[in-house]
Length: 142
Length: 142
DNA sequence: ATTAACTGATACTAACTTAGTATCAGAATT
DNA sequence: AATTCTGATACTAAGTTAGTATCAGTTAAT
Image (cartoon, rainbow over all chains, first blue to last red):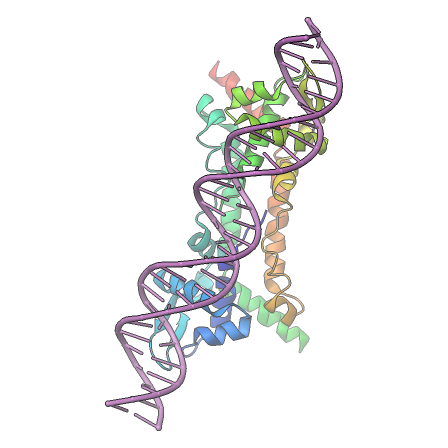
């Protein structure tokens, strides 16, 4: 069971990368090189992040992207939702047999509990937190 | 983000169905009819559950399947693992750029924490518990 | 004014996964 | 011998994923 797909994965890495350079515009090319993310793929991902307001962009030479929100306000849950849709355990379990037969599907209850928990946890993991942790680790290594 | 696929979904439903009839052999056809699961698909799923020891089988007329373990010892996590592999957030996040560059990848830490949590929660949701909850709901409805 | 370095939008593709179907062989019951 | 079942396994259509490509337009520098 793979939770994050490449889009989400690359998006998070790109956001971390941008969060580490809060000043100026960074080109997709630069991020692609730094993170080893396929250029054209990353471009499409960034375009989506721009549409969603997580990232700002400036066209033309010297342009690029930068974070559009405070890193501590960008949770991984939000990124997952953009590229993989809301966390849902099984779209059918809620509606098919067991649930339509028995008004109060017990699976539904357990599943929604876990769903919520996962969402909550992924919300708490913000780009800001990841960056802070990263810096802490770097500092320890000297 | 869909967590459970149809195989897991159907497997859990089939296991619940078997758990509700602890005596005798139940045919795949009967489960298929009861739960509205495509017959051939269910057969393949049951065969896998048999190979994994969660379910026992008896060939021939009057044969069928039955639970091979105590329902309270079958966690949904185990079923997920059979049909979707171990919960893993992103196979590459651990090995690529960020992690190979920085020995102690911070993403890895957060991600493994959530991974473990999800696994633990799905382990606690056993077929036995689901059946108990189901019976409780039924009883309340009279 | 031209060129170079960028993003915006969008179309395309190969490989893989998912969900479901089908078939044939063999075992137990009647 | 017929019927009812599982065992094993091959096949398929549709959808998803990961990645590529292209062209248009914008900005900056020369």
